[in-house]
Length: 69
Image 1 (cartoon, rainbow, N blue to C red):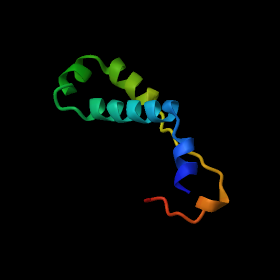
Image 2 (image 1 turned 180 degrees about the vertical axis):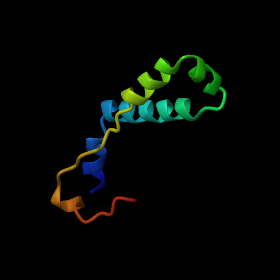
Image 3 (image 1 turned 90 degrees about the vertical axis):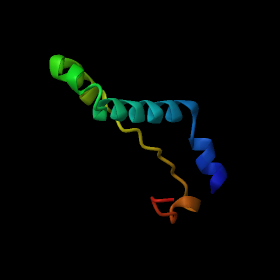
Image 4 (image 1 turned 45 degrees about the horizontal axis):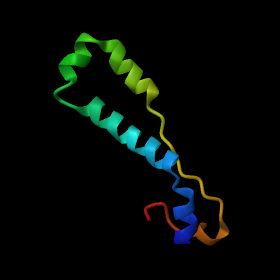
């Protein structure tokens, strides 16, 4: 099971997931609130650019593993 999940975690998946985390941190940042108030288009571009990447694994061996693991 672990090998199948590890094989599905490619560099692209890890990069996209990390970029989504960084975007979330930027949008929630107190220091950038003033900047986003002056530049609402920047906030909109970050919010629209936010794409959640889901790891899709199609394997009967890991079908019974709960999502929180």
